[in-house]
Image (cartoon, rainbow, N blue to C red; front, side, top):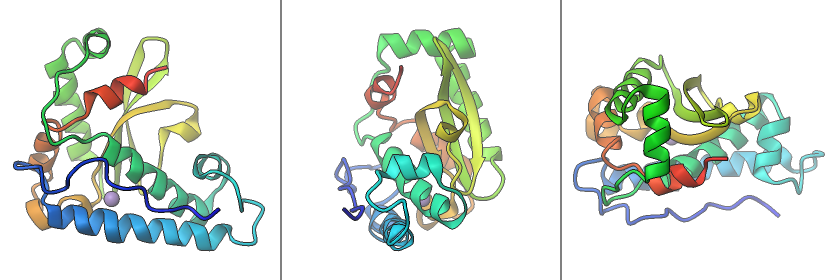
Length: 191
Ligand code: MN
């Protein structure tokens, strides 16, 4: 079964103070579609054919890893977003406080990591053990799963994620991202 474009889990026009519907149209309909198409081409006729996207991410390398991981990372990123600001569930609040001193402290450290992630990549909140959360920045298509960690939250810091709306102002994009995190999704990812 070829990989297919997952629908966006929200109305892309519903964000009033974040990236525009135009950005989502390119990011989801063009960039993510292209990663999926390329992953499909690369698995065709290989021993990866028929494997789930996550299996391919976990076991491939080189060009196939890049395309498959970009496909997986983008679906995860879109699931991390919600137009309506959400309260952080108690369970996650407690973990953020335990690992980053406070929720605000977590947001500041996450934003600093995302702003300073050099070039194109992803900045993650991941779970590394029971009650243990860490920040992690990857370049290009990198993903903490391949190092054995559990991704909880990610922000795409490739310029295509924000350039149409924010141009070079990545810090503003990161600030507004943090107003639109789907904290329930993040909490559901906890092991
Ligand atoms: Mn992207």
